[in-house]
Image (cartoon, rainbow, N blue to C red; front, side, top):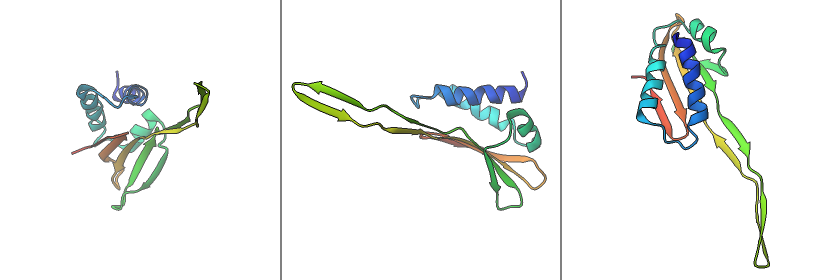
Amino acid sequence: MDTGALLIILILALVFSIASENKSKNDIAEFNETLNSWIGVQHGDLIETTGPPSYTSEDGRGGKVLVYDYSTERLTTGKAEYWRNTITYTPPKTIKTKCVIMFWVDSNGYIYQWFWEYGKHRYRSN
């Protein structure tokens, strides 16, 4: 399996399997290693494999930062409960889940750093 396909699979696994924010150390290490495999690679190869980033920004050194934002927001339903002649209403809540992966690209187009964040988890390349 090529690195791009593995990255896509790991991103999907990250997004869909971290509901409890209790990622195992092995899963995190494997994901970090996959991101490490992109360091030194032309950013066009990353985009060709994973698709375009959600947005880009300048890195302050003549390069850019590719940002893949997989954050979600969902609204829970409200509910009314009746117990002992009392009605208790729980209003809907918005639940936000932040999931962002960033790649820094130098002025020659090569990836030189990465960072990812999911909930309370934050990791970056060395």
